[in-house]
Length: 278
Ligand SMILES: [Zn+2]
Image (tube, rainbow, N blue to C red; front, side, top):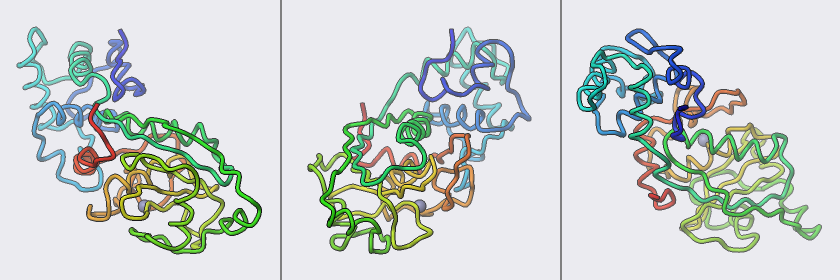
């Protein structure tokens, strides 16, 4: 039976293990190892060595620590063979134990411009990134804002630099457009351009009115990145990750591989009132 948890089900390398076509053991590395490590951390196993980096953590390296934690997991879950290797029965048991979504983030989309990447791709990319960690990105509503010509011209280029708190100015005016949404949800605006030409997204918003915006030429992962800023808030450090494999890397990526989050970023995001336990 294929892996069904939202964390594992889209990860081909892990489905291969479930199908008995591969085994992970010491020396293996990659994003699939990161996802297994993160699941084990969430199941209560401490991994201080694998989580030492603030850029890409757990580190995705099947070393002595991972082997030892897999061994502990197997010992606690008879009749699994206790060999420290991740084979068919062990991945099935981890998949079963971590189960479905644990948290949900509700997004309301408001568009002023058509994006280069399709809306479906933008949404499914965000859903894929967060599902890896049991967080459901929920499409709460979507509307195209049909603005009168003068308003449309005004917001064609959002004339304000991006900062964390924007209680006034064009971002605040932009975020006030359209019907209100619950303050426990996040509004996401798709606009044409910002006055800062090299900026493709902004997670800043007015106090108590969670919102972010991306431009029409943003990459497929940018909306997920800006929602990440909204969930992490201005007090999380580092604001941006130094690893291009991390969702919170400063530069835009349009690659096909889903980006990762660290366990510290996740702990902060899961504590946000916008990321509710389900
Ligand atoms: Zn950013």
